Length: 440
Image 1: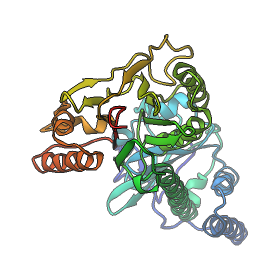
Image 2: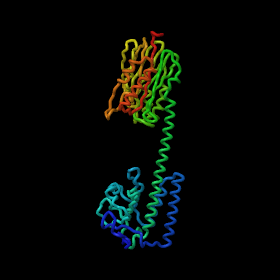
Image 3: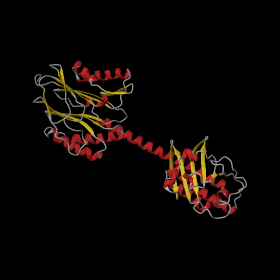
């Protein structure tokens, strides 16, 4: 280690043999002072560009490194900064990756409260470090600048001693600039995410149909309800006319929540509308949609899906359930209901789907069909998760219209939430009443 000035005192450091730097008695010749002021002006310009133009922090860090290397002759620099409770390495010049990883910041660095030259090498984690400059705000460490010199044999007074005030100033200045940069970058990200959220919300509201906007379909009554868990959700349902004598409908649920799920479902809606028709076998439609989901999600998300198609002239309801919660179908003449269970995997789970069995129901007397997503039947109460279809099984037997059924389910849900039930997913409900052949 280079010779140290007498102005350093052996107090307040992490180790009794380390030396705390103080500025008293450190004189700087005019030429050097002029050079340092020029450097500060360049750093101030870089800082201004960060604030005004959203520039990156790289120019500022580069100037800081140059100042340390050229003015102080120290070629090892590590800049640590606390960001939202996490310590981040903002800059590392010429210090081994292993050495930086070995530093336990609370244990190894928190004891330093003032700029300190490490004269002892008892702490192996700091073996490549000669100087610790702490940045403390309101009594708590917010940053550390670690300096080292690979050439420690040069005689004379250490520049860190001669230029103590300068080093302290550019260190604190750079810290404030980096804090500003991180805050600005965070605000930009939040603004972008907020804009994406608004866009996804608008898109989803356009995609989720409203019963009042559906064209009148003789022989079918429809009611629906949608409640996303977040501002945007991963649920989707639809009712589409497929010619004069056929109606298609579906309900789907993307795994996961938030923007990614909502965007995948937006893409899925477009694909569904483009592929569904009155004659293509349902299993072929499912296979095509499965490939498109895989291409869109890359296998990171999947969709459970129920697809139905009703032929008005024959009263035939055909359906295919791809991993979705089983809808309930009630025969209103016998007051019995059945579950339309899954016969294949969800979309996007595998590249080649297992052979799917298409279900068929010939509706002669009036019947009610209830489709829903798992947010309706999965819940928490007192920390315990449960799966319970009683909320739909009870109401489907007591209500004779889709509007009454959806309203009763929402009322039951509200009562359960008042009793402590916690809903933690999107909730979608689609109810359809088929008049049946006998009524025609």
